[in-house]
Length: 110
Image (tube, rainbow, N blue to C red; front, side):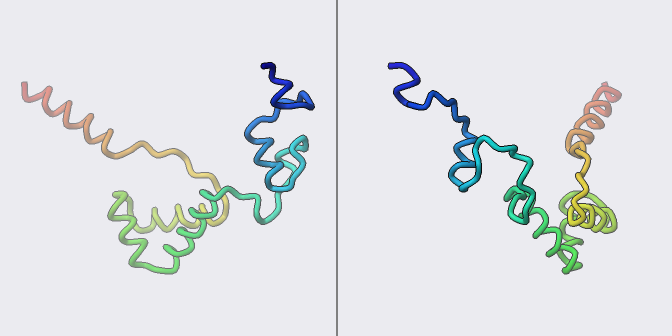
């Protein structure tokens, strides 16, 4: 069967357009047009909420610093940037850096 039997109007709806339609928004409209309070993604809302909780509890900041290997001021700075909406730069993982150091050490021992 042809695509027209599944979609009688002949319109090609993308997954994003179906999502917009399910949320009672114009699927043909500009997706950047709606910048209301609920337009943030769930992930960014969750990160914002976690940052607020961490800033309110010094023990959580210390725990996060311990887990990530950062200093307490660095974790506090990242939380403040998250709350202000400043995008964070991607950070190289410390495990990748430590594996490079270990491989250099092994090479020197040989």
